[in-house]
Length: 193
Image (cartoon, rainbow, N blue to C red; front, side, top):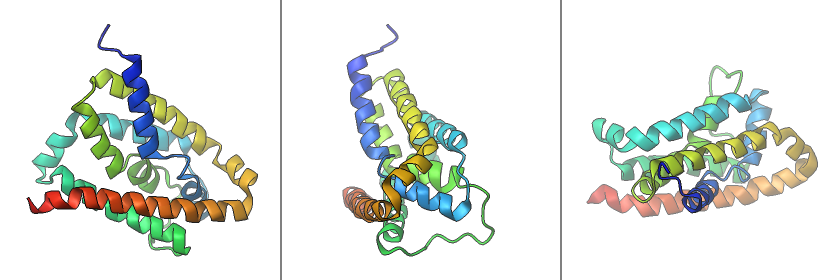
């Protein structure tokens, strides 16, 4: 009925969960909350969900319209992830905003952390293999999980403590750096074709 396939939904959900890696971004979320003071979980979750669903349908056409191919988009996203990873590993602040925002809900949280280049390129690949309705349901399931993690980030911070968060931040910084390098390596060849 309507192309619903629960096996597809589970598969897509697991792929998106791995790419979004909301559990791995908890140290970044805690860091952002420390910088800006407040994170609006609802706004970030809804914005990320909308970005992903819109990109699912118009992403490739939108990129073509502005003259950007998927490879260029992915390489640009890999640079953003690279610099975020450096911040986490080295404990430095690269991203500086002159007028400090009152919250970090949309940028950099909803985009590029949750609905970033990795997620977007994954959505374009999933679109070619699975029914759109199953992808949308998987996106919504992941957004619910994202919301829960964002909402409980303060509790997670208390549970882990400052030292635990430091270790996790550096560990996931290295993982994020590896994802950035992999995303770059997989797509840089496409720039020269």
